[in-house]
Image (cartoon, rainbow, N blue to C red; front, side, top):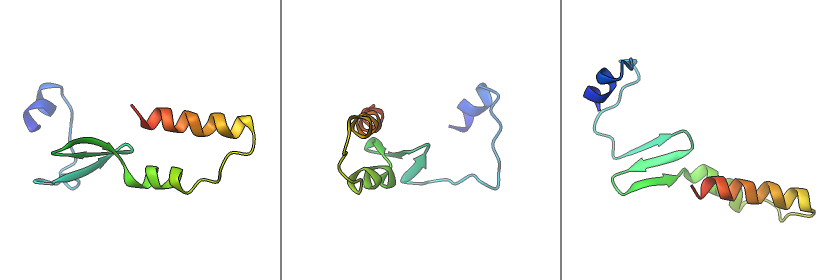
Length: 70
């Protein structure tokens, strides 16, 4: 990882670096050795949403689910 950042001229903040992490939250996704998953807080927000009461609310929910399905 450090070699890749150097190769692409990406600078890192030494105070924020963490090594040997088994799980990392990154822009709404959780990166693990098992792969990329959606962050649990995003999934929980969808689980706790009230059912849509009109077409616009349904479209909003479908848009969120479609985004998280990537």
